[in-house]
Image: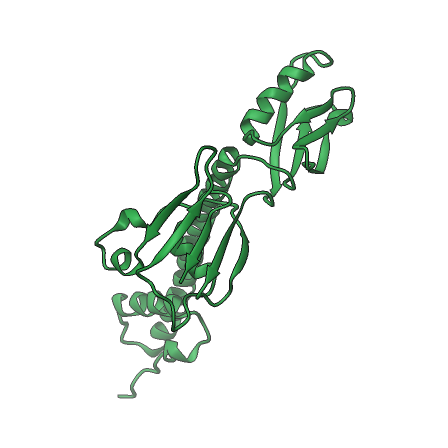
Length: 238
């Protein structure tokens, strides 16, 4: 009796590895028909079904991940404290004359709106600025609806000096820990004294010095040492 023809090995097909694994599993789980024609008909059908299922699943996961990313970005934007140099959009619903796009906050911390003139933006979050503008615009518009969008975060920065690969000034556009700052700066040089790192923090009353022991953090002995950076923090790696 002539043996039935076999379906080509999936590894011969140029597909991403996770997709190949799913497809191979589906092939092995399916029944095997004794007739050659039946086998040739069955396996391509399962192959098409496998591709459809996996592609659909990946699409759903990608969409969910994108939505979560958008929510996180919105939360960061709403909690971000504006400063001079930041670029924002001020959108007033159905009122083009009051709408500003790519507006840079000036050195005095203000922006200028038609009729309203100067409005202080620095020191406020985007949500606080939205609330303030809606209050101010009530003199000219009935029930104004304002949206403030952070386009570019330029005002908040931190600095890293000493024995790292790339010293310098970096934008602080989101919540960032000191370990993440080391990664952004390209890691340490071979001469870095990782137990003697410190952060200089400017306060209104008195500047503070915060000691950071890199070895204790990565060893799990001092997770609190992995502090969250603030604007104008300076990290010094001796």
